[in-house]
Length: 581
Image: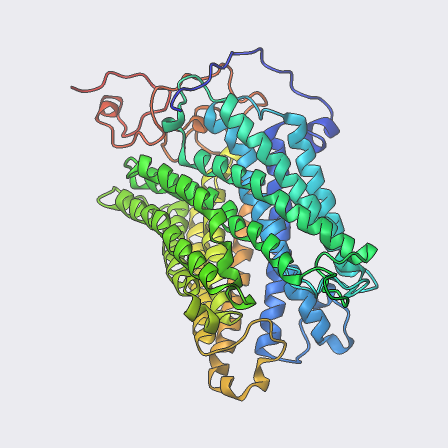
């Protein structure tokens, strides 16, 4: 397991010429990575605007929305109607999970970084890589069309539970397009997973054994295994759901004849068999990125590298065994529910080890509080809080009370929104110089961090409080419930914090696009780290490496005494020096 494959230094491939082959239908992993990144950032903005509209309705039920809201629905007087509200939270969840975070973290940074981090010239299957992006582009087109079709947008929630999503022609043609879009999104993910797995197995540079891989590569590799195993389960559920909608089959529709017909709960089993590994599909790359960046900016080797790798593998193994905690209230067998509860508690052990190793990396480190480091520290905090709140939902008795309340919304968003969003920004600020050859503004970056981190925690921790008080999620008008009126101020405060959070992202947009033109040219190695991507120019040439590098050490050679004679505290993975005795 520790041996690296023998990679022949093949001739440098010619660079494509012409606009279409170079920038549109490109097989270069770096171009494809940027395509995924820009597509994901665009949908992140759309999903964020939808979140603002949802919070507007919750804070001011029945009030006319700002003009920008009219772009997303048609309603008399500019008021969000109940069907429009249902469509908004359906599309918000779908976009953020499948069409924003996944393309950015896995498609964008995964494609751009993976060959560079392992010393390869490209992905194992460049044409398959191109096909994965354009399959996703087709899926996004269908998703956008689903929201604007005359017969009604999807309104069954991002989980599309049966029977809400199964009735023929109801809630509209948009729901059918939604199902096809999710299927194509999954096909794109499986293409990428096959490519990532093969690339890591076959194209690692000489000397790049498994224990010299950056933890970012471990996260991407393991998440690809989960994608390859469990996304097809979601695809199968979408096919059966499409048959129920279009052809009158009864896979998920309870029949009127005894012994005939399907079961809506079957859909939940299929969805969550994918849905809970999906949490780790998204968070594994984030864990790897944070572990690497904490080491780089603490200026010391990652604490417990082998334990971290073992914990990541343990999470992958256990991830398929805990999905039933989403279904405690479905009439699940008490014995089966207890089993899922215990397994969910057990999976918290490797995740706790990850947090402990991150804190160990920080302990007595010479910490540099650059913008990427601030976002990583914010991620450690929010992930810790989100993980602790998950323990309550893992308990059968507590979950029966908290299920379908805003406590679930707060917990879910602390993990899948806050932690991932902060990691995403950390990755952008860290690898932007490598992608575009320019530096982002540190001053704007730090201001962006504080204006993101503080309101973000107000929003999602406030939702935890509302959930404990019994406020149910997916409500159109919370003011109609007398018991919640004492918390009306908190509910409005959450909305105002959400508006501040959304406005803060304009700083990031400005910083991102202005720096493309006027940003300071990036130094060769602005962060002074030794991983392979910083050994090539920024942005990298088409072929990445003039010669395939030979790796002699790990990715976190910081505070190494052998580097002192060189006048620095770090060593490259390819650097051969005389070790002090």
